[in-house]
Length: 184
Image 1 (cartoon, rainbow, N blue to C red):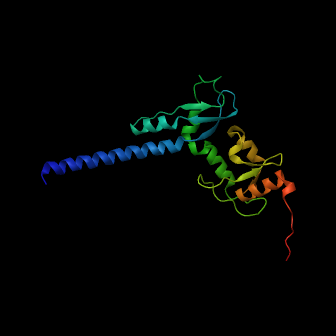
Image 2 (cartoon, rainbow, N blue to C red):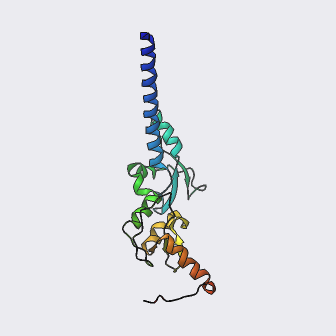
Image 3 (tube, helix red, strand yellow):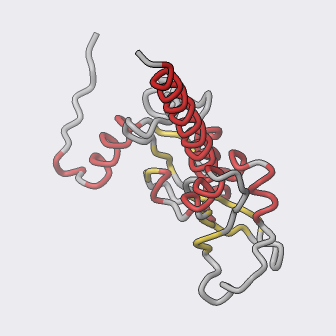
């Protein structure tokens, strides 16, 4: 091979490595800001649910810039022209504000109130655990309005997915359930 070909191969390898590096940076930024976040609104000090424009943040990071903005808030459209001061808290610790992270931390080390088995770590690929709410109903944590989640978790009891299905059916359709006590 000619020396020019070695030079061309080296340039292509360096360009591909650089492109992969920038894509990894963008992917990291996307994951960091993806999903619902909970913050205290600086204006009224109430908990609000927001979405960061994670795609835009990822694209900005890929070209070496930093750009974080909201693309959704529970106070919008009325307060859509706010200064987005809540972003400072999110940028400082995005994992602490993530709805998924808040739920995962709450379920960590908990056992199901029915079967007394440990509840496994939250996974986006498995069935979500549930909880018994303050009114005694079994609901999946993902069905709770994000801005209400911390308050609901404070008074809830954890339920594994299997028990949430079984006990939910038992409560909704008691006429279809026959109780047969287990005999030794």
